[in-house]
Length: 100
Image (cartoon, rainbow, N blue to C red; front, side, top):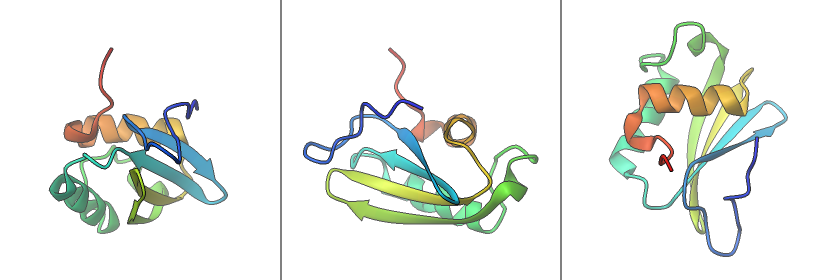
């Protein structure tokens, strides 16, 4: 769960995920398309997303926060950072981490 791309002074350059007690924070660059994020968050909250059917029941809620240098999607539920990044990549390819 490396978060070496996360900084508080200059922002982040690609998606990262960090666990907190009760869920995962998905951290995204401020350049992430807001319309895509809004659809992502809304569909997750109503269970209408394209995530794997085994993943959806683990989610209790999803919130979007704008912060200096990044966007933060707080996902509450019994999920791990790896699961969140994998599901984001398959269900919202526009948010997928850049490939080297």
